[in-house]
Image 1: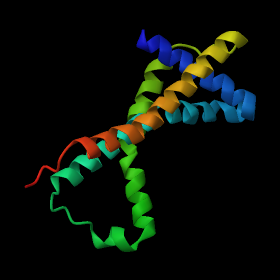
Image 2 (image 1 turned 90 degrees about the vertical axis):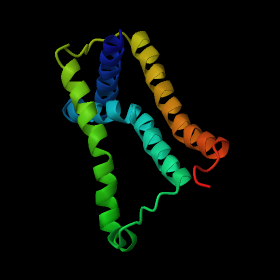
Image 3 (image 1 turned 30 degrees about the vertical axis):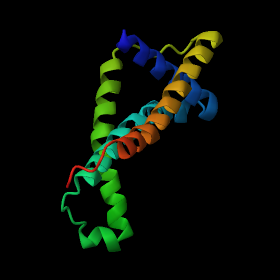
Length: 143
């Protein structure tokens, strides 16, 4: 059942990308759109870990290279998203056995597109709501 929803989302992202950019660019762009829908959920996990680390007040010192070098910060940020990218590529590879429905009816496309937008919005809300609620509701772990 989840696989069917993922396939429908992938097909919707493909048609959406082809409508926006054409057939050639749409072939690669739909993967970015598909990954972008679920990015908020991964970012909420990262911010949850950061809040828990702050609450625990562990003596982790930031390396000086991250304090002084913007390029090192960008590289570190990209490394944080590497597991997400690998996982999403794995999912896209798993559902690639099902061919893309290029002739999706417009009403089904609109329905799945609204579902994709809702998934994206929920992910962005969770990215803010989970860390905020943990930060406000949990006392510090140290005494």
